[in-house]
Image 1 (cartoon, rainbow, N blue to C red):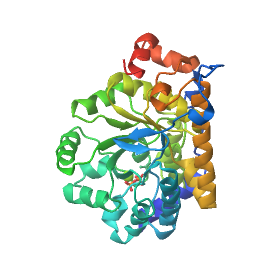
Image 2 (cartoon, rainbow, N blue to C red):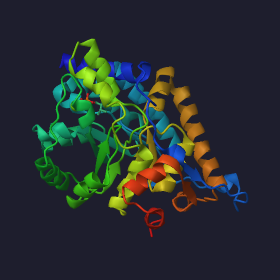
Image 3 (cartoon, helix red, strand yellow):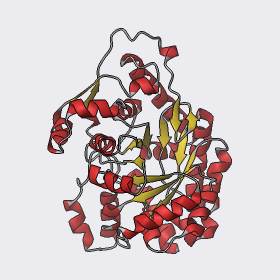
Length: 367
Ligand SMILES: CC(C)CCOP(=O)(O)OP(=O)(O)O
Ligand SMILES: [Mg+2]
């Protein structure tokens, strides 16, 4: 268990202080919300209310899962949860594997529901743990600790393959097991990547098993390959040299939102991965996401304290409102239909993947 606690603490240290983020691109820079000089509404009339898996939220902003497992990490979770509750947003927690392996770490997660009694909360566990024996008992514990409204199952093969102590168990059989477990749990399952994005092939595979909620977590933000490379170098692990070769492996977030919607038009999509502000969130929603998500900028703010978290998230909400106003979007459903232009690398990516803009435009608009 010591090694697990160490890893949790080292992950926060390396993601915040290491040079492991924004080394690649989300391709959101290739998306333009077309300026509407006469929006037809006032800023005050812009309605940012959104739905998160049936729950009402004040703005389409989610703090996605990042940490937990020790008293100090629980402090960060508690600070973030308190602000998420005040602003009426959504929050996920970091992997709760540590709750199963070290029950005394429960408190660092319990504090989230205590500080956010009414917010939609998302529990978190890795797909490798489900492959390696986690069953209903473990999953129900992971959900109950924060009285979660949904469970994110994270996919982090690119991280595990370079993690010195990593587990690369992603065999097909686990999807049948997860299907059985989800039918007994009564809360939605979200399939969540962790910085490398979801492809249309992978989304189709999940859809065929009845999974339709995705958190794309694409390339462009924190690189967990880079994180594990650093951890490996500290331990003289031979895999670290190869990790450098893969430092830009993955699907950029904008491309992953498009591929996910293309593959499963009726899916619920969190647009995350290198999202850093309200304009990124508005673009992700215009591309087809239902809500935008980020983790690192909120974690960094939580290290400075509650006021910094509240200021950051309040500014993001304002930025979303401004992007909605100037794209002529009175509410989030209009933002999903706002005129956009896709240029550069993202346009080339779509072409290579056989995605035509005209057909995609209908899909993103829910047509
Ligand atoms: C999910 C990932 C981005 C960060 C945690 O990775 P990890 O392998 O340490 O997570 P586990 O504690 O679930 O093994
Ligand atoms: Mg793991």
